[in-house]
Image (cartoon, rainbow, N blue to C red; front, top):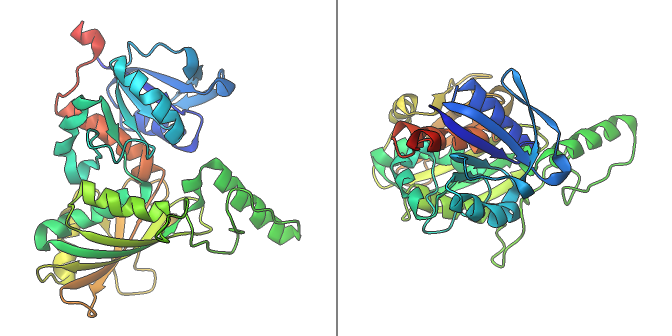
Length: 344
């Protein structure tokens, strides 16, 4: 007997992607329920070859739900996740609400799957920030081999990371450029069409943005608290797919060839690294794919034991929906969770 799975935030970009991936990967669910706010009640969403009617979260009874994939934003998760968890469902949350809670495991299955067993403290598991997820997938095999001391990362993050409103704003502004219409900036603080914005999330007292701080804090929690990391996060006029330029300093020597071999064998990684025109991955190739693509692996001669690489991934998939479902698969594969109907 399979699980009963709820997808909360089913009408959003990530929620719809979660439904698609549940169907694609044939997750062992006997029933999937689409849930959102009251204003979306009755909306149709796709799940494989089925159409689901969205139910309102306000009056939904979660007592027979086994796994809740939560994509309702930080405030929604703070309000609802503890209630859903108390009803006996394991909540896998995509927001930042629980990532820094010591009693909530923060999981990227290719990196720290063993930590998933800690979910029993609060019945909540956190999904990392989209830019962190792809970064640690690339860093993990290199850290195991040569121990990372320091990382300097610059991100080039697509507008889908800001939700449907971000994608709509890029589309509308690009259209306005070609039709000489008025360019309005609502979702982003500056125009995004044909531009770059070195600002994602709110500014903090030290001058970093919250997005940059997330990458620092989450990499330490997922991979190793001893790693020093600094980030500059930039929004770019790309619809789907985050890219990162990563400089890594190691404790022990590691050559580009050794790094390529390690990454080719590592779960979740796909190396495309030819020293020729077009011999690298871009967000266009990554969109709709599950892998973290790694290219441009080379020596960083400015530090001892340094490498530089380029990594790209679909932020809606590995950066959000896919990672959440991989966490659910971990629970199932490790027999950490039994369906309530089976247990009864």
